[in-house]
Image 1 (cartoon, rainbow, N blue to C red):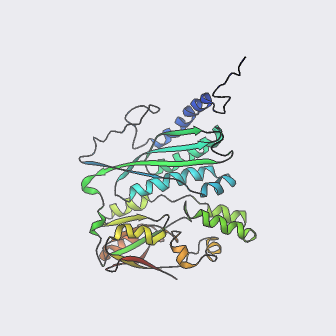
Image 2 (cartoon, rainbow, N blue to C red):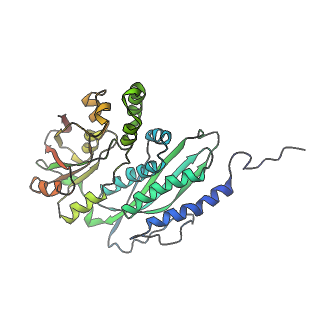
Image 3 (cartoon, rainbow, N blue to C red):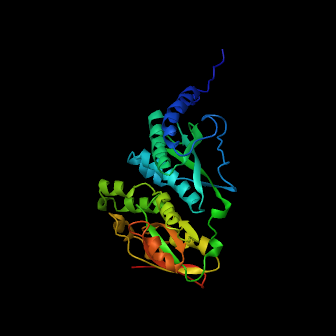
Length: 329
């Protein structure tokens, strides 16, 4: 008699995966406050009613947590991984001037561990509820032999919407405008391939408490955007400072112009102990250097823009010469 093959025997338990959907829905409901799905959760695709907008424009984004996830797993900080996933996507949507309305996640694992996945979703739900974005669905893929045991693959997908007339137009950025930087809560979810090498090479220089502090979740900047709108600041562009640092991310919005910036040295927790092993030019092009969000505004409104968040600073000015130049110190 030939061997009987089953999907479960091959390492995939579809009943366990189906049971997880119900558990996730309990967490997901926390994200439905000011916004909710048009139809029931759990269908093949999620729907959202845009009839509240006069001229709706939708925007989308996709991002992950990068190699930071390995360190988060090592220190059992699964909720932070979920928050990072949300913020890396939602912040990109916010740069457009639109509203983040729906978020979907992809979680790839070797074998389903319901408690670990629920902790990831819990972190996502907390960040999503904070910015009124609905967890609309996602995919949990059990892939034995493909995803190593103990590892998690994460990807996020954000959908936003906004009135066409209200969207930010970076082509309006002009020479003389100023760049206001808003503080980050840490390295966030980029640059960790470099950070991990430094932590491995100088392990005795860092305590577990210091490393855990550096794992702080990526900050959501919805409060900054709301504050700028409330203060009626004429925001010409906004940038989420991730991979590529201030130069690469600001060059996306300065167009044919450029910018000259001077930033203070980053003195948060044990971060200076990491940065002392990296030349300034490398650090500036890898990390956010303490400023995870930048708004470009008219010089006359700089003071109002700075007042939108404690720790915000005018970092520099838009100049005619192409390229973004950053001086540290």
